[in-house]
Image 1 (cartoon, rainbow, N blue to C red):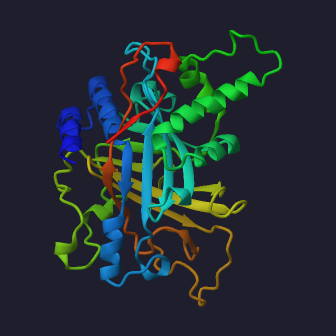
Image 2 (image 1 turned 90 degrees about the vertical axis):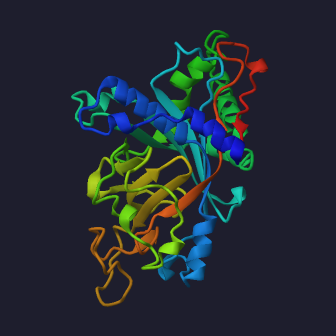
Image 3 (image 1 turned 180 degrees about the vertical axis):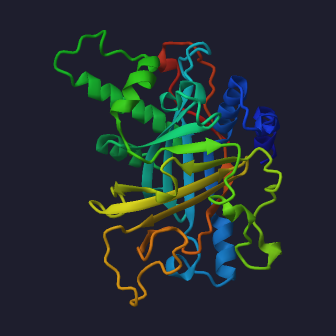
Length: 351
C-alpha cells in the first residue's frame, strides 16, 4: 500500500487553484488530467457492508448495502506518442457482487472528454466540467471480456482482438484497411464496439452540489461519528471530484440490459471521487409499475422526486455505496510511439 500511495502522490495535481467559477483553459486541462489520474483501479465497499451489518442494516429494504466491487481500466497509451494523445479517454468498467469477478452485473464503457474538446459545451456553459459518456458493450465484446473477468489488465488486449476480428471479417477489406495500428483502434474502432446510453451523460466538477451531494454532510449511522468510514476532509474538499447527471434531478429512462432485460428503468446518479475512495449514489426505479399508495410497495418518502415508484436497485436510505481503493491501474508503458504491437501486448500494471 505504501508504494501505491507514494506513486499516487507523485501524480496528484493541486486543484485548489481552480476552485472558482472563472476557469481558464489551463485549469480545465489540469482538472481533466487530475480526474483521469484518480478514475482508475479497483474499489470495494467491503468495510461499509461490515459496518451496515453491525448496525443491523441488511441490503435492499433493510437499508443496508450490497457488497459491490468496481474495476476501472483506462485505455492504454501503447503506440501513442505524447503529441498523438487525444483530449479524451476511454475506460472499461465492471461492477460485480461479493468480491467475485464471476458475478459481474454491469459492464460499461466510459468516454471522458476534456472541456476543450466537448462539442456539447461550445458556449463554455459548463466551464471546466468534464463530460463522461456512458456506453453498453456489444454482445461479442462483453462475452469475450467475461471469459477474462478476473484479469482486468488483459481487457484492452481482448477488446483490441475483438475489433481486429470484426474488421478482418469484411468481404472487401484490403491489407491496408485491416490495420493493426493502435491509433486507428482508439480513434475509430472502439466506438463500433459500443452503444451510447442516450441521455445518461455525467458531468464531473471540482465543486460539489449542496443539494445533489447532500450525502457528504450526512452521518449514515446517526450520532455514531466513530463509525464514519472516511478520513477525507470533505469540508475543504481536498482534491475531490464530483459528478451529476446532465439530465438533472429528473434522471433518465433507459432499457435495462443486464438486470431485467427488456424492462425500462428510471436511473438517477451522483458520484464523488477522491484518491482513495469512490462514492456511488446510483438508484433505479420502475417508471411503469402501478403501485397502490396503501400497499407499501412504493417509495413513500418522495425525496427523490419519483412519487411512489418502487425501487429496482440502490440504497433505500439514499446513502451512497462507499467504495475504498484497493488497487491502481496504470496506462503508461515502455513502448510509447511504437507500432509493433507484438512488443506491446496491451497488458497494464496493477498495483
